[in-house]
Image (cartoon, rainbow, N blue to C red; front, side, top):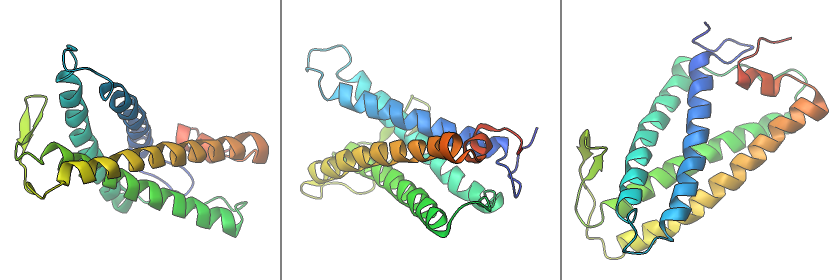
Length: 184
């Protein structure tokens, strides 16, 4: 089992974190869209936001680990076949996705703690409210949260389409590397 990344291949930890975050982001996006349609008398009216907050906080922890892991185990070098524009756009896309994800998570925290109450993570532990009572904190953070969520979904779809383009049109190993296959 290859845990750390090599110069040509992603390790299993990077692959696991990548796909865990991807699944969590799309699950959270769907949950968020669904929960805002619930009426006050719906049985999930209070449970869905609590689930959304808990998963969001765990996702924040996973993202912090992911950033630290990039320093411990740098990603593989870009393929030699990549043009300069591909290398730059890839790095820009990854950087933008990281910033937007952290923005979503921080704005979600500001929404959830605007009333001064901590966030309870599945009843395991609490994250205290540190910034509260800032006027329209929940409303402003909510707008930011919504737009960043859509931005991440659109950018991640483009990211996925680029991986498919590399696989089916360019016929290189970009997608295979992130799926854990050995380089050809």
